[in-house]
Image (cartoon, rainbow, N blue to C red; front, side, top):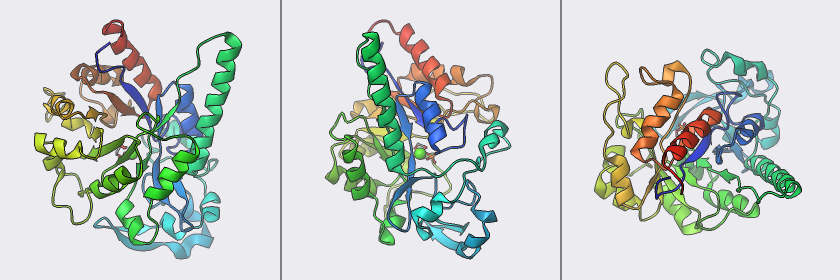
Length: 343
Ligand code: G3P
Ligand code: CA
């Protein structure tokens, strides 16, 4: 094992390779598969409740488009500089959102997940934390019965989505997020929770509110839009320079880069030589948790399966990673750790 410790496996949107993302079913599968952390992306309801969705527009992941009673809520908004037409969580009360049913985001790539279409609800952050706590309690009882040491705590890794947009409509996320996590015991620098965001201003606000470790997400240069924050002069390319990484270290303890920033691909999809990002981030005192590792061939580098792709990234020294198939992630991580010798 390296001196930096065992890399963590973060279940991306739950076990989203096996059940529709951001549902209690998806999180439960991830927990059972041995993920160290479960990842909810968070948005707000009109009545100020944090719920798990990848974006505030919910036409692509729920049945809202076929619900006649909500036809009048369809609208067009500019979100972080991008014009989007659909249905938005901030226009729904929690009770209304709870009446919707979730659908698989990418049915063409994950047809097996569609068996659950129409059966699952959008969960609140609180419901996800309660699930984690419930499983932990069950694991503790089981370990006691078997005379085993107490199990490792189950971590959560929430991401605030569009926090400037929500603050601008009177639904600021930061205090609600920290207060909810604290109610469930997630607090302090080793609080088994990481808080992540693409927006620097959001992370700086969280830095003033909590000692939980913060993660600056960094997209690849040329990503569709720059989500650092409105008015922020820096770009993602600025953040991955040694100077940019030192600036991040003032408020965060970790970066979450797009995986191509760690190992790029050539035009044929083959992995190229790693960049210096992991070494540069470590020199700045930052851990590195890249995203997103997915088993379907559409997402894989040429010539490798997911375990092989992860082997290459783990060899570079990453400290954890986001995976849609946490079981494969755990196997790859454990094989890597076994190859590194005892801690
Ligand atoms: O949070 C890590 C990764 O999930 C960031 O990208 O767009 O999948 O939330 P996204
Ligand atoms: Ca995310």
